[in-house]
Image 1 (cartoon, helix red, strand yellow):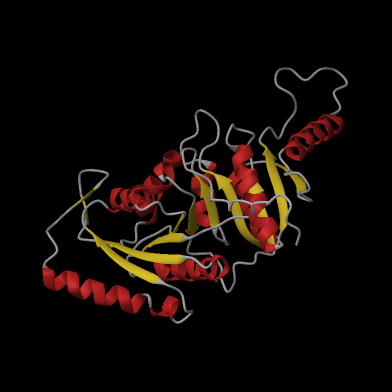
Image 2 (cartoon, one colour; image 1 turned 180 degrees about the horizontal axis):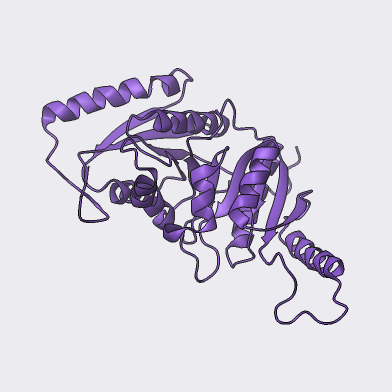
Length: 310
């Protein structure tokens, strides 16, 4: 059983960060969590560097106004009866988010993929991507195309895996969430080689048999990732991984995508990886499990006392 006690929800007062808060509220209701709204100020995009730099110290008057704005922003969450804290930091947004997540041991970060600056690739690359690369905990991302979140009960959870060393952890997280929310779980792999085998095609090569054998092999590997007792389904597609993941999310009632932040050794979330593309364009929230992040915490089982019967 997963226990999410503390959720960090960075905000810049944009509509997308408001949508992220709604997703945080849905999860907090389900897990009886506390939400912390974090605003990082002041910050300006440096013209000559891929970084954020402080422009000025926040005056006491500005800080007080920001605090009032944060409390107003949090009203929707408080109306649900949830405990909500507000916090203000100064400096580099990504670094401050990560520092807060580490120092206060948050279980989950929920944030939008784009901010108020408008240049979506810049904003995602400079803040959300930096958080995804180095977060100490899983990160739930909400993109502009993401559907509303009335509840944390997902119809179907899609878990794309690439069979990298972190795939087992990602599949385990997805299995726990599916079991708790009574969701259908689909373990998914995309075979990138659309053609035939490497090298010259031998005489009499049967492309249909080759594809069938490749898919059977993938399904066997997917079954090995299933949790004991899980009824997770296996699905296989051919093509570009990000396109196929997004296609399935559009065509099926997918309520959540759970995936790792890194793939193969040459993959980089900063330079166009599958996770990067899915996070930016998904029509549902994406739970990203960074390679170095701790998993969502699980509750300890109830102790069994010898000689005591219920």
